[in-house]
Image (tube, rainbow, N blue to C red; front, side):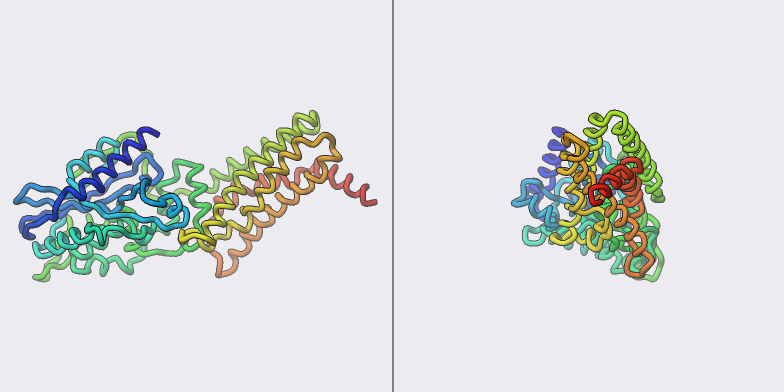
Length: 425
C-alpha cells in the first residue's frame, strides 16, 4: 500500500504542481519536435491498460514538455462518490518530460517514444492546441473508459497533426476485436479481476468497433501511427513516424495478449472443482450430519455473499450510474441481489439443531439456487433472439455447476421431498 501511495503522490506532484509552475511554451513550428510517449502496463488495476502522452521538444530552448490527459487525484472533492456514480473527473496537465519518463522507468513500465514527421505549421498547431487544453478553464473533463480518455485525446491530437487524415484512414475501418476482447487481452492473468470486470460489462461492448475506436488503448495508438502514412501538401505519401526510441522495456510483467483467449474453459474447470467439493460436503453431511451441515451452511453463505454482492453492484451500476458500459447486462437474469438471501439462510442452515428445523431453510436455499440455474438457462436461450448478444459464457460457466449441485444434490433432495410430502399427506 505504501508503494502505491508513493506512486500516486509522485504522479500527482508532476501532473498538477508542475503544471502550475511551467509557463506557456512558445516557439516556432520549425523549433518543435512532436513525440508520442506510450507507456506499458503498471501494477495497479487502473494502470493495466497502459498510458500515453504527448511530448513536445523545443530544440531552440532545450525544453521538453509532457502533456498528460490522464490525471486524477483521490483528494478531489467527492472523488469516490463521483467514481461510484460514473462521473469520473480527469484533468490535463503539463510538466517536464524527463521527470515523468523517469517515474515510468522506475516503476518498471515500458516506455517507447514515437517521433512524428509533420510540417512545421502543424507542429505549431498541435502546440497551441496542447497549451490551450491544459489551461485551468479547459483541463478538466468527464472521463469515459472507451470513448474519452487519455488515449483518445492523444489520438485526436494526431488527427489534428495530419489535417484529419488519421481519422479519415481509420474512422470506418473495422477493428480487430470488440471492446470486451481488448479488455480481456489485458486482464487474462488475474482470474478474479478478469471475471468481475467482465461480469459487470454489458452487451453494448460486444458490438463490432472501428480501428479508430480501438485506439482507446495507448498501445493501439502506437501500433497504428507506426504504420500510418499521410499525404503532404505536395501530394507525396509520407510516414507519420520517422523515429521510434525504446527508452525502457519492463521486466517480469504479464504479457498483453495479441489475441484474447477463451476464458470460459478456465472458469468452468474451476467451478467443477468447487462443485466436487460441495458434493463431498453433502456426502460428509450424510455421514457426519453436524459437521457437514455447518460446512455446507458456510458455503451457502459465502456463495450468496460473493455472487449476491456482485449482482447488487451490477444492479446499481446498470440503473443508477453513468457507467454506460454496464448497461443492458443479461447477467442480472441469474446473478442479482436476490442471491444475498443465501447469506442469512446459510447461517440458519448451519445453526439448525435438528433436520426438521433445517428443512424450511434447505427448501428456500434449493429454490434460490434452482432459480439461479434457470436464470442461466434463460440467459442462454434469449441469445437466440436478435436483441441479445452478450458474450457472457464465462460468467455462466462459473456459476452453473455450483448452482446445479446446490439445487439438485440428489440424496438430500429426495429426503427433503419425501419429508415435505409426508407432512402434506
